[in-house]
Image (cartoon, rainbow, N blue to C red):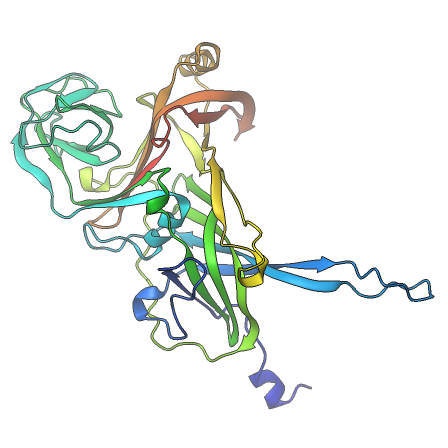
Amino acid sequence: MPTSTEQLYAVRDGIRLVAVKAETTPGVDAIAGTPASSDYITCRADIAFQYDQHPNTAVTNSYDELPPIPGAQRATVTLRLQMVGSGVAATPPDWGRLLGGAAMTETITAAALGFGSMATAGTGTSVTLPNIFGSVAQQYRGMPILLTGNPGGAGAYDIIGDYTASRVAYISSVYSPVLSTATSVMIPANVLYAPTSIDDFEKWFTLYLWHDEIFYAVVGAKVVGLQIQLTSGAPAEMTVTLAGLVAQKFNVIARSANFTPVTRSPPIWRYLAGPAGSAMSRLNRTRARVRQASFDFGLAGTQMENPEAYQGYDPAILTKRAIRIRLDPFQHAVDTPLRASLIDTAIPVPYCAIWGSGEGNRFALMTPSAQAVDHQRSVRNELGVDSLTLAPTTPDAGLFLACF
């Protein structure tokens, strides 16, 4: 029978804590021993170590080799979370900082734009905004837009996939009656994450991890994997993989007491009443009845060798991004041939998803232009399914995520 001391020092796997902070100098601990309350992320973290070991070639006058010589120690940290917003309009979620390490920019629109203003023209798939809106091309691409009056009733949220200097916003659905001067337009306060290839925007992180009282620290951590998965009727899930250098491992350090977990329920992908509870799954502006939509950012990175650096490696850098979107809509006598033609013609199309309810807890995720690169048949619930893979066609505009 275990003694009380043995029970006291057992490591309970369910007790975990993660602090993440962007580094001013890549590879230099940004937390410096004591996390601030704002450094924590509510998520589940796992860590795996990579030990560089070099053969010891000394001869022993025996069949037996000597043990290898230990070298650099690196770590891969995987964070898994259900996507929940801050609950406050234009305030980033706690996990939003991670996207800066995945070659994405963060743009905050602190207040709603155009409240009560009317469109100057419209079509079934576009609306021309009044001159109180900006005239810079792509200024609002990826942002949500609320349309009321026409469409009638409570209106609808949509996503801007393309925006011109003439203030024409191309949206992600087809409206009938067409949008017109009777359409009221508003871009709500939001936080927008957009892809970039500009090094100046990229970030590296210090991570502190506790598994009960067992402590790990990783510096120079770079996001080298990012996946988002939406499931109909369920919360959205995000998986973030970071590669960094081991600063501490398997130490015994008491957990910090200043962590307050996010306990707000994550929104699920389903329709709720009115535009505030809008849900959307649209492929080429047509409803796509999917069970899952998965978004893989396809990141690749490397840690460059440097004898003068900690552990003999510089912090990781990204080398490429190859976004893929995978959908599984039910087959349809009209839609399936149209989807097949996307492969044959290589014509790019948009895909977008909206889910959530309440300010600061709604999300919009979209690719404005993606080419179908694979189309297979499968079965779900004894019904035919189109298994589609899409690849974005526009550099630095492959995937946008808005929180609003």
